[in-house]
Length: 90
Image (cartoon, rainbow, N blue to C red; front, side):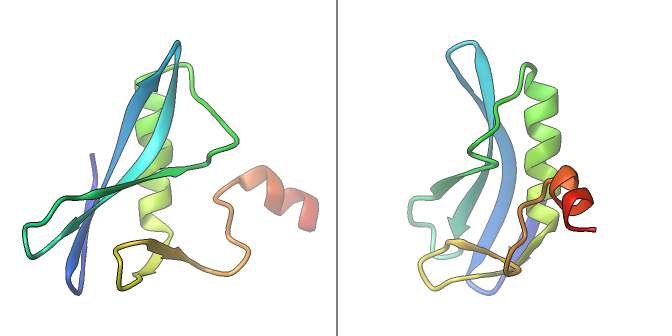
């Protein structure tokens, strides 16, 4: 699990099991101690192993450019985190 701090929030990467597959997620923990929010990343993909999902979540966390007032992670415009999308654009 990776962690990054932003003004008012700490974001942590992780993975969760959904049925027989895993989903990558970013958890947004407010500095005021209130309840965290969880955001699925790469929603149109699932992973066969928890390690792969956790690695994808860590990659997504590295791509976060900021955090909105409600704790939602913000990404650069058009950023999907998928390397295969970039190959199609080139």
